[in-house]
Image (cartoon, rainbow, N blue to C red; front, side, top):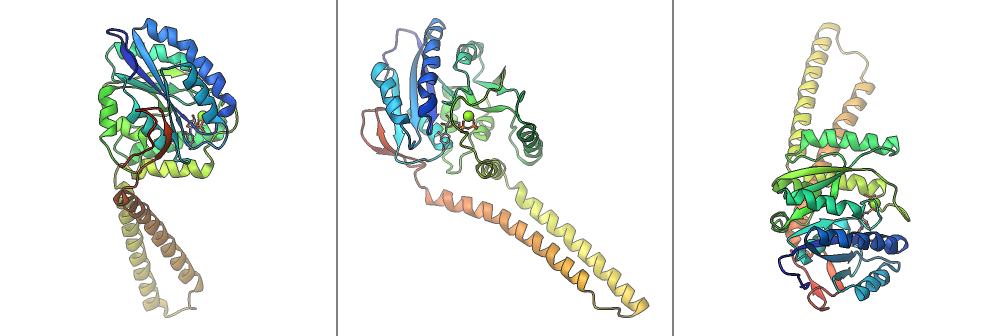
Length: 326
Ligand code: UDP
Ligand code: MG
């Protein structure tokens, strides 16, 4: 536990890092610039760097910060488990009255933290930094907008465009999120699902400081599917609707064919119609199977109850190696 000044509240700052050695020093510098302002607001701080199995020298950098600042903790995973696991580990290790999660690539400006604290003091339990999409390539902005439109219809929780994981969470929210033990985590949805009073502050979108984003199109797509499937069985229902509509259409078509045969007699065997039917039905079946597969896969992952991450080294609660079971 960090030595608390009397009455000062504690803010935990959680930073998931994966191959960020290029920008980490700059990031830590920018974060340090905020420490005084955070103290002025009446808060102590602890920083928790979660090294998500980086293959570069990120951990070395983090250990430098740990050596120079006793309020800095670190957790290092045995391999790359993904940002969701890294955030979870950070939230579990956090001892603060509230926590801020921010990316290590300076896309989430640390200078926003004092403003978040101000909002927190006003009584909001979640202060969500909302990124404007100004200056973003039109393609990603377009797909993001479409995704949010779609998810808004499909799932029960509200996802807001530009509102990501960069947010301040009250202890109540942290405990509520941690009480959800699911393996396929979609934190944005979980944060929204738990509720509590929420407010937004806008910030300007900026480019990644160094190296590339870790989100390939495939990874983003998987994340998008997780977002929809983790929250309800709407896609399953859509399968049923789709199947039903197609069944009705096929029956109508059969009746039409039957009447045609009655009136005109059998014409040339319909190669075209056969192929069309096979391909349409085959497509629908594959789509439906795929959607069912999504759920089955998740059920499989949930029943296995594997740990969501494995810690190789940490200075949180000494440096004992530790395995977290969900
Ligand atoms: N990150 C992580 N594990 C991963 C991928 C990313 O901890 O497997 C971290 C990364 O170091 C960064 C944050 O998550 O601090 C956001 O990653 P990135 O910048 O690649 O995502 P984007 O900003 O494109 O959404
Ligand atoms: Mg980024």
